[in-house]
Length: 475
Ligand code: BG6
Image 1 (tube, rainbow, N blue to C red):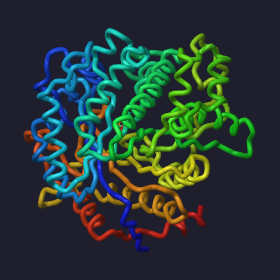
Image 2 (image 1 turned 120 degrees about the vertical axis):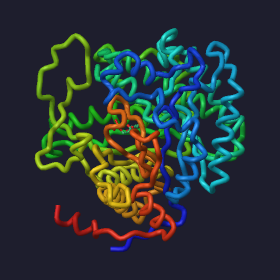
Image 3 (image 1 turned 60 degrees about the horizontal axis):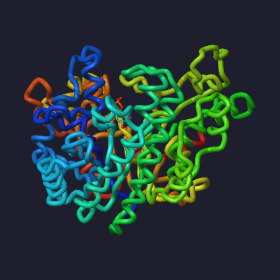
């Protein structure tokens, strides 16, 4: 079947600062949170690679942007590294050399016919703010974030027309402070909620600041809401488990960012479990008044849940008291990343955004497939023939375009990622890029087959794929 991409639907890719830039020229004391994660246990990062060099994009951005042009991308989402952008973390004074660097990066995108999109933070909280103030749990840091945001808006707002306040703001609080999964391995839901609330307030204040500047553009947030499916919607316990998981993993950011308020269910549970975050009375009004213009939504895998399997007997409350993850038999997997592949979730989410969130304008801000040992797919000419990635892109786009046809307001799809890059802990194990990074060979760049596919698809505005309406009937 032939799929047509609407003219106002923009296809692009991602270039998140800490995962591509590297920091060899960084000033003393200007590390960010992922640097701290790496320095605490470098041996836990795959083959010892980390953010220090990453892809050396900081030095090689001109070469990289030329290659990105070859992929046909119309938009690239990138971000300044907050920890190098600010010279003095107490006053918020900007490092002018770094500000000029990012000005040049933006100009380079524009010169190559690519629209640059800025996300202010992809976890590059300056280490200083974590070590001295406990990050977003502190109002000082919230204020310093807003100061940084204002500098970025003021300096680049005439060149960049789409800004996002955060990328996946739940990830660091959840994995580092609640789930004990990443350094510093915290298991304290209230602490995580303080970070989450701090980020929600920081985002709302940055949005207020953007609007005060009267810039001609849009501002949003990039959220990775969990796309949750119950083992059985007919089973009331499973259904309840889903609603509870949804109140945090979907609702905390989606509801505050788009509707301007927290899900009541989440607040009730947090209060009941003595985990209500610290807040100031004015916060709720600030959140209510400063909702987003546009949503960026990241999607990789669904979350499948069932009623809680175990009795929660730890002193530290975790939402898993109310649900357990359900390992659905027969699910399709990306074995390298250990994530389920389920493209229809994009369609389901699109309908939910249309029906429950005022059909706000949105884009898929990240979607992609990480694959290990991609060298085995190299052809005689030396190109990585990543047909699995091409298929992945097509099937996700096919479901998305079906949603667009049904009136959903999705306006774009940005692949993760423009180039292979450094993942948290997995480093360069699973490759995500349209552009290969050859670590053995001076990080040489080379287009993969998917890059040529991407360019063709974007230029022609169409692609061929199976009829997903049939697979709907089959399943
Ligand atoms: C998203 C993040 O969660 O998933 C990216 O925004 C990340 O930073 C991507 O790289 C893929 O996950 P991973 O862990 O395989 O890199």
